[in-house]
Length: 114
Length: 116
Image (cartoon, rainbow over all chains, first blue to last red; front, side, top):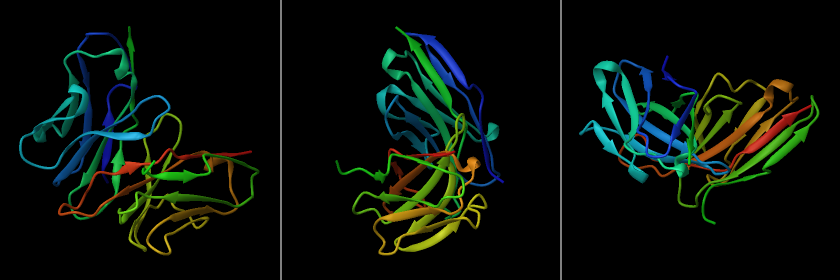
């Protein structure tokens, strides 16, 4: 069965610090990978996605993620965080088999100190 | 607002009662998903519709849960004989079928259910 593991449940950073949130998944086949973000009081929204091609994908607001197939990982990065990045971040995987079930990780709460 | 809407936003009920939630997807989206999210967890897939056809259901969706999308537009999720363990946020999402098997899902604000 597919599963998604996010390494940190809570992260606290100061503004301008670099961010890396870990995500590992378990599935042996081809996958589609996603990072979603939920800002306080707002809906879940897509931050970035990987389907195929360049394993380094860029998303909104300066975020990027790298797909490393050999490590079953899809870590999220941002070189310099801002206070407005305070949010909960979810990694998700969908097996590229034509099915539609998307598995989410438990989420990482990021708090950025001004 | 042309995003996904859900009604009600909050529902408090007593154990044993039935509840029904509604989701209105983005108008041109033909795919609709229901998820459940509990505290400290990510969304858990419940079921999926393409137009009016329910194509996939999670084992989480017990016999007390039923979902419909009768005309391929809005959807309802009903929970019968609610239990305290049903307390959660119920999320709806929609997407537009395209070339790939997956398209970006747009989420609604959710319905928070509290079972007393």
